[in-house]
Amino acid sequence: MRFVLLPGQRHDSTGVRPLIEGIVFGALLGDKAFDADWLRADLDDRGAAAVIPPKTNRKAAIAFDRDMYRWRHLIENTFAKLKEFRAVATRYDKTDTSYAATIHLAAAVIASR
Image (cartoon, rainbow, N blue to C red; front, top):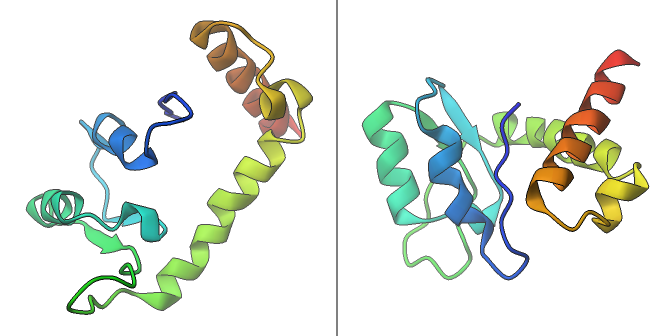
C-alpha cells in the first residue's frame, strides 16, 4: 500500500504523480476530482485506461468504462474501514510520520481480520 499525506487545503490530484511513479498498471480509477488533462495525458503515455468520469464543466464529454468504475466502491470501503479507527479519523497525531504509522498499523489490523 502506498499513500501520500497532503495538507488539508491541497487538492487530492497533486498527490497522484508521486503515487503512480514507478508502478505499472492497466487502469486508474478516480472520481470527478481527478479529471485533469495532465493526468489523462500521463495515463495515455503509460498505456493505462483513465476510468474517471468527466467533470460537468468539460466542453466535450469523455467516455469512460462505467462497469469498471463501479469497482471504485472497494476503495471507498477501505477508507471507511480505516476511519473506524478513531486515531485515523480524527488525526490526533501531531507529526506526519506518526500519523503515517497509525495508518499502517490500522491497515495491518484490518488485513489480519
